[in-house]
Amino acid sequence: MRLVVNKVSVETGPQAPEMTLLRFLREQRRLTGTKEGCASGDCGACTVMVVEQGPDGPISRTVNSCICPLGSVAGQEVVTVEGLASDGELHPVQEAMVNCHGSQCGFCTPGFVMSLASLHSEQAALLEADDGERRHRILDAISGNLCRCTGYRPIVEAGFQALKKPAQLANIVQEQGEGAPFASNETASEAGNGYYRPATEEALQQCLRDQPTARLIAGGTDLMLEATQLYRTFDVLIDLNAIGSLKQVSVTSEHIAVGAAVTYTELERTLGARCSELMQMLNRLGSRQIRNRGTVGGNIGNASPIADMPPYLLVLEAELIIRNSRGKERRERLIDFYRGYKQTTLGAGEYLAEVVFDRAAFEEPLKLIKLSKRYEDDISAVMGAFRWRADGSLAIAYGGMAATPKRALETEALLNRSIWQREGELDQVVLDLACEQLAREFTPMTDVRASADYRMAMAGTLLRKACRALVAERVGKATEPGVFSHA
Ligand SMILES: Cc1cc2nc3c(=O)[nH]c(=O)nc-3n(C[C@H](O)[C@H](O)[C@H](O)COP(=O)(O)OP(=O)(O)OC[C@H]3O[C@@H](n4cnc5c(N)ncnc54)[C@H](O)[C@@H]3O)c2cc1C
Ligand code: FES
Ligand code: FES
Image 1 (cartoon, protein in one colour):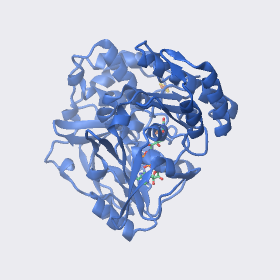
Image 2 (image 1 turned 60 degrees about the horizontal axis):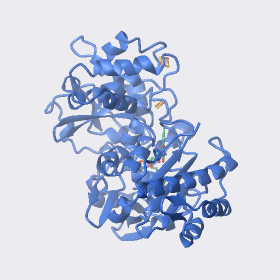
Image 3 (image 1 turned 45 degrees about the horizontal axis):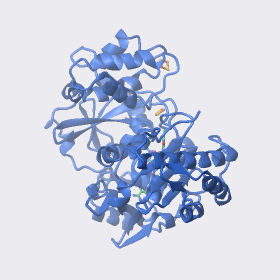
């Protein structure tokens, strides 16, 4: 396969399907400015930019190259820290990092520089932004980068300083026409290395028929950890990222459909902009690098009990559109999809195509509350989702409280049988009973993130907090922010 690295077209030759972009850059291109810290997407030392052509020019996205399969950037352009300085001049972000003393041991520095340089490529759009908005964008850009010696203040300051200088993305990417990376339809499968990147669902279905043992990969932010942490190899990977029909969000007056390969960054832009609770939750799902790659389908398909989207989708009473290698389609309620810990109803040759829910449900009052040890880039200890339907009944779901993400159906029934709120007041007795019911309905486990007792206590606290906020919203009182962190 071919790709462009720092303006140079590169032919990779055959590679193992699990070859990461980081290993390729460091070991085969000798671009050792990009560092390996954790090899699990957590520290950001390996951050690079992937540049794609958008309707108004090139668009840059940061990725954790340690968990990004090389095959997924076939035909695309990658910029590493070595590619930033041009014509002997430091990039404005590099210059600002020097001026603000933003680096000490320097191990994290290339990652921070790449995150800020990617943000800097949007400098023109941020010209009108006030300091609050700029600060928010800087913190968002570096939310997946850890520094253990400098401290973040000088790095944030460097971000502010750099944003005063004009963007220069065009200087660091290949001009179109020179090898035309953007026009390429090349798939890694052409290198015959077991990494397939079909461009349509028909081609995907053909791949699934030809390669019945293949694993599906979307962002790889879960799957690639098997390679980097457990040292697994894959015979065949089928990448879903080039399939346009799986990457669409469609909103009609009746329904909303989200393609399985829609990334969180895209979801922020489309649905997040229409629902502040969803946006706040997405802002805390992984980091910018993770949100640029991780997908909704991957979050449902991995069947993790602590995945953040399923509780939300469960209270929306979402349905899944599932297709198979013969193009046959079935529809299943998300609530019926999970069979047990990391088990789903997906059969051989099946894949998630879309998740669909009612638009009316999407627009009803909602609270999403995520509890994690760290505000950013941390997996939930408990995630609660609460939707107040138009008829006054509640839909409740939790992550982190059972072997799968789960609706609290019995607690809902108890609450919805009672008049649990009067105008502006909550019936505390009913809420106490509901919390006792939660304890009968869920058996959380103890792990590194939280003890079972803590999880149980917090599930009740989240329920009370959500009910308080929903009632206050209905009577027009100010509410506390829905999403908070608990150390
Ligand atoms: C540093 C870090 C932070 C994270 N933080 C969070 C967090 O805060 N909240 C959270 O919920 N998750 C988090 N995650 C987990 C992960 O990012 C998400 O679960 C993400 O949505 C996975 O999507 P993906 O596209 O990367 O999945 P992949 O890794 O590509 O796939 C995951 C699994 O789903 C399967 N799959 C993918 N797409 C489909 C499909 N269309 N049909 C059928 N099966 C499919 C794959 O075969 C694989 O088994 C984090 C991960 C990392 C590394
Ligand atoms: S090496 Fe830590 S995120 Fe990639
Ligand atoms: S400068 Fe040492 S880890 Fe950031």
